[in-house]
Image (cartoon, rainbow, N blue to C red; front, side):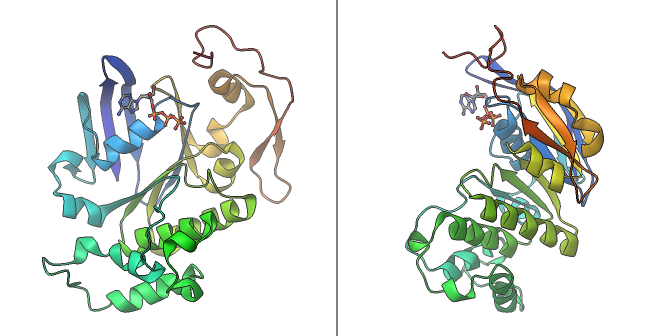
Length: 272
Ligand SMILES: Nc1ncnc2c1ncn2[C@@H]1O[C@H](COP(=O)(O)OP(=O)(O)OP(=O)(O)O)[C@@H](O)[C@H]1O
């Protein structure tokens, strides 16, 4: 689905991504982990085509990302940010319908016969029917992120890029969001790449992980192989205690207060 080869990116003479190579197969759910400033958002922006690499190549399926038209790209991929929806005054249903823009002609008519039924189905699935006529600006953060997900679902992409989508959600909405996206993937064969700060959520929901440090890809592969305390210590400079989840055979990590509080020189974690 995505192939990045020797991708490098600098901003104002500062190298932010260094020789990154990535291969993501259709239907996989990849998490993207790394400290603040390690280059996660930049990587997502390059894949989405909003930024261009300085060198290297990025393929989406069999074409270079840069060779797709904007509309073609919007039918293939969608991006959802931390706060996926600005506090606009449009009603929830209208906002979800806006996700259909890649399928609309120049008069704004949707070419698909099933567009209305699709929007109804998405609203029902995301439990948004009761909120259909409410302005987005009146919703809670969790409801707003659900509406943002609805808009992305209406876009019917093959690939979804998520940039820290659960950062502002409480624990209930974090789980709800990850469940909704996982169910959608199971039903549609969607491919997902999600930058996440919560290592335990990533361990539970992602089948593969990319781990970045200072613009380099430090590890890539199946979650169970990649997520080890020694890797996390190297990348995040904290000592975590690993346990096995009691219900699933997956690693989870417990904080050790005090561990990692010291900040080695040159680690990228120093105060400016
Ligand atoms: N448009 C830009 N112009 C200049 N510098 C940028 C730009 N975008 C990102 N950077 C720099 O690139 C580096 C990587 O940023 P990026 O946002 O990709 O990291 P991140 O891993 O997503 O961080 P976080 O976890 O804090 O969101 C940072 O030093 C940032 O300041």
